[in-house]
Length: 188
Image 1 (cartoon, rainbow, N blue to C red):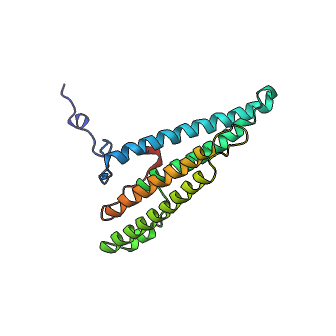
Image 2: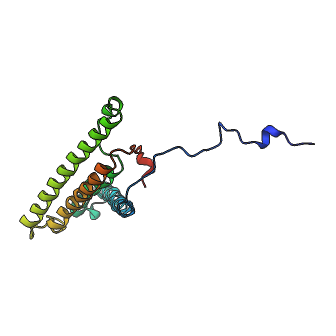
Image 3: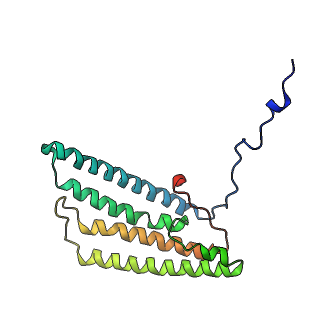
């Protein structure tokens, strides 16, 4: 009895082959920082989930009612929003108008991507400026229920937009490189 040669060979249509993706040229420190941003964002999602779950349960068990849980969920959502700014800019996950990518080719596309990155860096820089101004303006103010210092909460937009500005500057120099496809399910 001999083995069937077709059964021993892998079918090229069904064998998993790695997709050809553009290589990431982002510096290692930014990839590491992206991991930190994702860890903080993941923690914020868990806190939001548990806070909302607590609120639902406390409707049926009034003894568990605590006004701080709502504030915790709200501020965790704010942390999630701002801490992911830099990660999304660095990984091509921010909002873009991709029609330009199909119309402009070659050097024109590089120029458009560089100008977009410059605009993003400037806007992020202005947001960093505003976050610093808020931290300086309200150093003693605290949240109502939990007593969290407002400067601590303003630090998240500061860090997020600073990260976004740095990543936008990196994207200026990588404008000639092909963009990587952003898949939120495969966040690195």
